[in-house]
Length: 504
Image 1 (tube, rainbow, N blue to C red):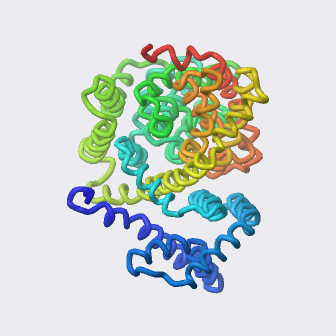
Image 2 (image 1 turned 90 degrees about the vertical axis):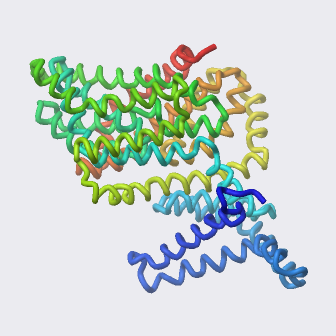
Image 3 (image 1 turned 45 degrees about the vertical axis):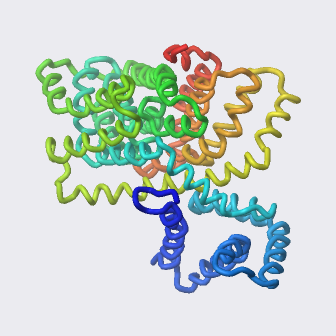
C-alpha cells in the first residue's frame, strides 16, 4: 500500500472530507449566522448527501456486499432530480457569487452540479484536489505566501520606502517611483491578493501626499501598483501557471522579467509626469542618508538576490528556495531587526493561515471543475469553434484580452489559472503562440483585471484602505488602468518582450 511517510495514503486523504466537514460545522456555528437561519446549513447537508448518493453507495460497498434495492432507486431518483435542477442551481450559484458567497463554494458547487447532471463520480473532485496538492512544486505556494506575510507584518516596508526615497527622491517624481518599486517588491512575494495595498497603502499614501502629490493621484497610483509585481520571480501565479500548463517555470520566470519592468516603468513615468506638472520639489540626495538606508535594509535587498540566484543557478529547487525564504525572513525580522517579537511569531503564522488555506481550497475545488470541463471536451469544442470562425491571430488575441480582463474581474487569479488556462492553452497552439508568451499574456491580463471597473478586487481594497467611495476610486484609477492596458497590449502583440530572455 502506498505510504506518505509512515501513514497509508487512504488514511492521509481523509483530511480532505474531514476538512470540509469542519468548514461546514464552522459555518453552521458561526456567531454571525442568526439562530433562526441555522436550519439552512442543515438543509444544505441533507441536499448534498442526497446528491452524493452514488458516492455514499460506493463507500457502502466497502462495508457490505449488497446495498439494497432502495439505495439504487434513490440513486436513480437523485440523477433525475440533478438533471432537472441543473439550470436553476447554476443560476443560484452565480447569483450567490455576486452576493458575496465564498468563491470555493461557488466553484465547488459548479463542479458538483455539472458532475451530478451527467451522473459522474464525485470522487473525482477530491481525487483531483489530492493530485494537485501532492504536486512537487505545490509547497512553494504556501511557503512563499508565509514569507510575504512575515514581511508585511514587519517594518520592512518602512525600510524599503526609506531606501528608495534616498536613492530616487532627488529625481522628479522620485517618491512615486519609489512607491511603485516597493509595491512591486511586496507583490512578488505576497501574490496579487491585495496584501500590498492593505499592508503598505497607508504608509505610502502618507509619504506621497506629504511630498506634495494630489490625494487622487496618490490613491490611483497605489491602487494601480497593488498587483504590479505579479510578473517578477518568484511570483506565486507564475509558479501555479507553470504547474497547470506544464510549462517550464524557470522559462516563465525569465519571460516575465521584461514585461514586468515595462509595467513598472509605465507607472513610474506617470509619477514623473505628475511631479513635473505639479512642480513638486525633489528631495536632495544625501550620501549619508543613502548609506544608512542601505545598511538598515540590506537584509530585504538580499532576499530576492539569494532566492533567485540559488534557484536559477540550480543550487536550490523551487520548494527549497521557498523554504529558505521563510527561514530567512523569520531570522531577519524576528532576530535581526526584532520587528516581530518571538512570542508573537506564531500569531503572525496563524494570521497567514486563512490566506494560505483560502488559496489552497480554491485551487483544489477549481481543479475539480477544470477536470469536468476537460472531460466534457470543452477545450476541443472551443478549438473547433475558433478554427471555424477566427482566422486572424490578432483577432484571437483581442478576444483573448477581453475574455481574460473579464475573468480577472470575476475570479481570483489562482482559480482563474486552474479553470481557464486549460481552455486557453489549446487555442494558443492553434495560432502558434509561444507557450511562455501565452502564459505572460494570460497573467498580465489577469493582473489588470484586479483594476478593471466596476468589480476589480483591488478597487474595493483601495476603497477600504484609503477610506474613499468606490466612485472616487474608479475615477482616480482610470488613467493608470488605461496606461497599464496599453502595456498589456504591447506585451500581447510583441512576443519579444516575453521571449527575449528565454533560452532557445
